[in-house]
Image 1 (cartoon, one colour):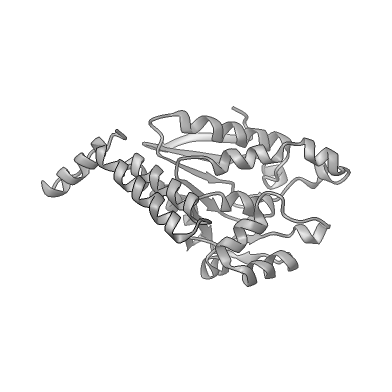
Image 2 (image 1 turned 180 degrees about the vertical axis):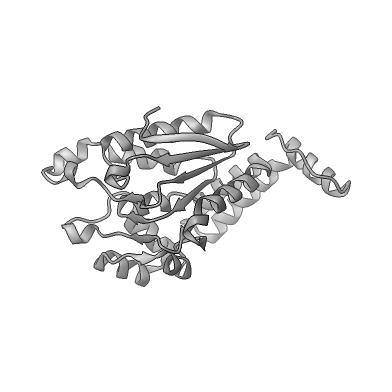
Length: 257
């Protein structure tokens, strides 16, 4: 695995992915894109893993795309980069993903954060889609995920002006799950991941699967997907363990079976 993405296991069942291009504020270049693709393609194969936290450093979660790569490219060259592959691999990750956002999460950085299921933002974070200020537009799902998160009018204000919002403002408009002091972002994200990792992983996967599949479907379709997934969990060992532990007033031990 590339040293551009450092992977550690800070708690049982939890993987921490730390972006590691500090000299470029973790800007997304081809090498980092490949490292992220490899990480998200590989980690879900580990049956012991139950949650992923992704973070940067104090200065930047990810300060957008590396414009030194894009500045002289034309349409055909950009198309050959295969950018969609990375985004698809991250979007299809079956494990719960938590983004711990300090500093700049701009352009591709905000798009990366929006691929997560939970975003913990620091008070001093800056989140935005500034692509319009350099003559382009979001290309990693920013226009679509932002409007689904915020609604048309708040999303269009960010997209058309390119102006970022603070971590506090992001929380207030629904672009972050929680906002905490900057030095508490990673500890809080890891605490959430650790809690998720202690819960039944099959249920967590089904919840993520149904939420993502149903968010753009008619309500009746979403309800049907939920009901089918709900029913399948009744044949799992974790369901028997969870309900038995509740009735016996003891802590459950979930095995993902």
